[in-house]
Length: 112
Length: 112
Image 1 (cartoon, each protein chain N blue to C red):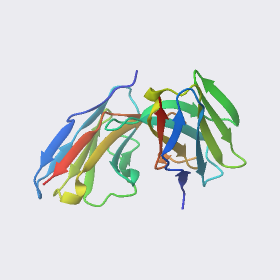
Image 2 (image 1 turned 45 degrees about the horizontal axis):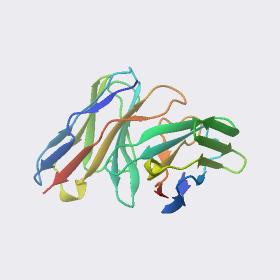
Image 3 (image 1 turned 180 degrees about the vertical axis):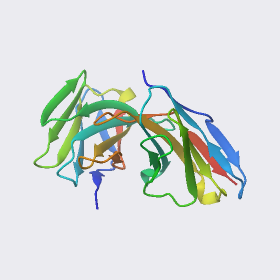
Image 4 (image 1 turned 120 degrees about the vertical axis):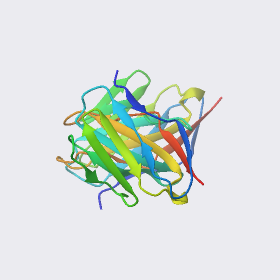
């Protein structure tokens, strides 16, 4: 079974803090993704990576950056957290071609 | 704009009935189609994938794909209260896309 592990289940941060969300997958997948999910807005793609050190902007990259130094690890960085970044963050990975996405358990981030 | 559309519901069915969930997509070149189930507060979990026109059955679940009509559906037979969740349709829009595009989901309630 594919395992995607997100480092924190719940996180509370203050406005202006730098926040790191970590994600690790154990299936040697090329592609990794960060989504946020908000009521009524569905899943929105923030960033994705198709290879080590490669990254592409998704639909809502503003206020976020990412890092992929190793194939199994994909980090989401909030440079200066704001209250509108309070959300559920979901990491996912998938293999090549038509394979499905596998999600981590999610991190519920609250910025106060 | 490339889109995946779902009826948001809620869809209520009595226990034992067939639940029918529908999804349309905008890109005629799409090749991969997935259904995810998401319980409240949890991350999405894959329940079905379908790549070719026609039906694909897995236990109580049947996915149906009609590429000419750009339409994919999920049937749940003998619905159970434990099937109550939000169902997300995901499509790999176009042949070369790395990402999956998600609909906003349909909330299903199975009434005992």
